[in-house]
Amino acid sequence: MSIEKKNKELLRNLVSVIEESRKRVAFAINSELTLLYWNIGKLINDDILNNERAEYGQKIIEELSAELTNRYGKGFSKRNIHNFLKFNDIFQKQDIVQTLSAQLTWSHIYSIIYISDNLKREFYTQMCIHERWSVRTLQERMNSMLYERTAISKKPEQTIINELELLKNEQRLTPDLIFRDPYVLDFLDLKDTYSERDLESAILMNLQQFITEMGTEFAFLARQKRIIIDNEDFYIDLLFYHRGLKSLIAIDLKLDKFKAAYKGQMELYLRWLERNEEREGENKPIGLILCAEKSPEQIKYLMIDENEHIKVSEYATTLFPKDILQQKLEKAIELAQNNLDRKY
Image 1 (tube, rainbow, N blue to C red):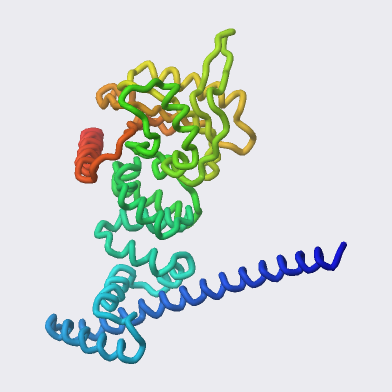
Image 2 (image 1 turned 180 degrees about the vertical axis):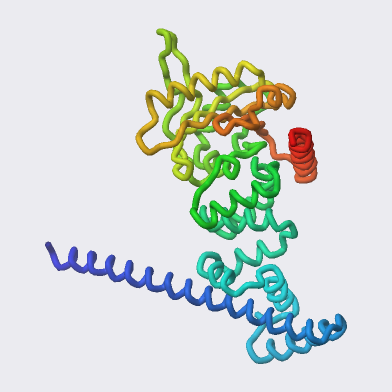
């Protein structure tokens, strides 16, 4: 080996060691800063609470901000101090904060603490940790109303709590935390008229973005997966594998409204996959029927919402205005809650 090659190898090793060390240092600094911000919030909150006067609180924040900014710089503006107070309000136990500071950056936490709904905030916190979202990804997920689009948001409160506890304590994902409705596929750039093959081809051409919309642990396996039953050919549009669920995921693409027959077709695919493709240690395959529109009555009578292995979701090839999306999701959650109330 020449000296030049030896030097290159040595340089690569040095760069690797330095980069890893810098990451650890940056991580340690972030953790300490996050704990510092929480402690600042706690000290001020405790002082304001003891004085029991709102006007005192505003005055003390202004005075402290001016003094700390003079000593340490712009990181202690009134706005930031209010963020520290909010941080302490939301997460009041120090052991929880220590755990969070070792898993998320302050920028992640800042994005989360202003979510008013406790369950929604916990959902984004745990999914962010589990799927290692960047701050940008977290904000995109929140802006796209991911929580409201997941099946978990339409479940009873105790079910949501239990599944988030499983994710937090055992790193176990459930289908209700993963599958969404609707899926927003605006990146496909499809025209007004297109076929199922066009939709499928557009997804494959934009596979990375499609997987981003689906979730981080999906791995693509096959397109038009051929299966033979009774000497007849059948084709699964898209076949994925989900690492967290340890399950094959069969996706059937439909351009029209959901029909009851689609459930039987998907059940056939899943039984075949279970017998011929499922490996030792894997869980049963899951089917996702992606339709242009759902049929709530048929879905209710078929009891698909109670089926862990078949999911039906709408997809949209154009981006919903956020207010329209919010209305659709609120209506869906209300409908699901009404169905639960009638059931119990």
